[in-house]
Image (cartoon, rainbow, N blue to C red; front, side):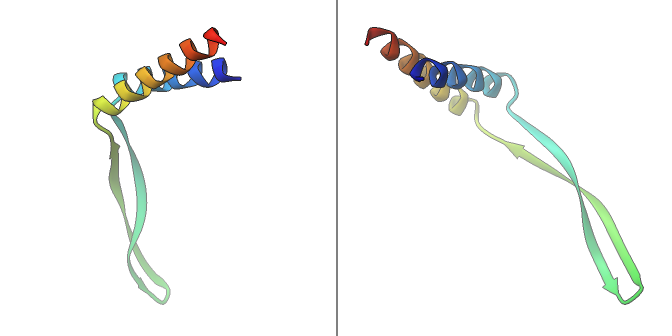
Length: 70
């Protein structure tokens, strides 16, 4: 079980180091006056610092190695 958690953390850590964020488009209502609706597409960005991926990667390696010792 701990090996699996360690591998998942390692993979997530590597992915977070490679991709430092992503963006998506969200439709927002600007005006809603009865039958008239005006909406706009807004670009939203989700980002994280690269050191977070490094911390998760190191934690995954630690969990993976600790599970082998038992």
